[in-house]
Length: 471
Image (cartoon, rainbow, N blue to C red; front, side, top):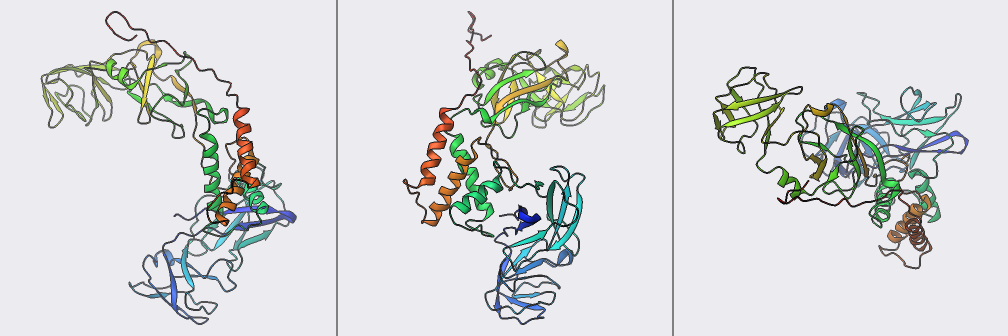
């Protein structure tokens, strides 16, 4: 598990409550011989995984919320074994006190007029209060419309990572993760814990599972539609374009509402087998090594599918070079006896043999990419046009309090989280008569009953000529 990001809440009376990060399981150890106050050496079970680089790892000695928990630094070379040299401890620590790596000991607090770190003002820097389950700060003086934070190491200055979400001074909106977590835990009489079960990270995971449970009830939800996604631009000789990473299904067309080039009509989907039929006797690769105009030898990335002799097209970015050759040494992908090499070529430029050229009208999908039925050439002013995609997304995984959920019924997701809290409190079983679980099922059904996608699905007949060729 990686170090979790910092999260915070805005409470009444201008109080910022910063939740301590959940720490990963390693590196960690525990004290095996009681240490006194001012001790500079800790005897531990094992010092593996700790380092004295960057001034030495910061160590959380004890647990968040322990009265005598403290943060100290590794302060000397580490030899594999059971000893850690540290900056002088403030408190005495008994046997079995945990020792874990923490990557920052202070928190910077920022204010801004917008929900962004850009242009924000540093208000102050405070120490983490490890003796409490959380660290609080009271905003005084100038107040801001939005607040954000980030963790910082006070020595050998490094930051934990990026800024937190910037949260409105009025608090979380009702569709944000922070609001739902607080409401669900309050409803169940449970406290949010710093790590493990019932931690914020645990709650993020449960919310994600709940949204997925709702999403799988229908194949196509209106709230998962994405329109006018810019998938890239048409380039000369291109073979494919990558689908967005958040598309629900990247191997079939079931998540595609529409795919078009520029201002033209949507392209027609064909199956992978139909696509392969269209591209039988066609070979594709790329230039492996840049070569100059007039060169008689060209090295391709893979020439094994190309003819022993003949010609192929190199799509050089602005033009198509029709190159003839006499020998294809397939073991090294080296083409020799080259003629008509007018332009030279650059590594990774497309190389085709026997390809259909022109304006694409059909496409297929497999392994996360769209493949066109023809290879774009210089006709019809294609080059540079946008490739527009309308599609259905996956549920976005939430990981901060400021994230908004995808499901358009926040209370439905809150009831799911309440059900998961109660399930784990009762030993892992959902009570079918539990009010939260019944409420969740009822609101999920209401979402299904009220769903109107606003989109029409139509089937386009496949035309076959007398030679059994699809067109």
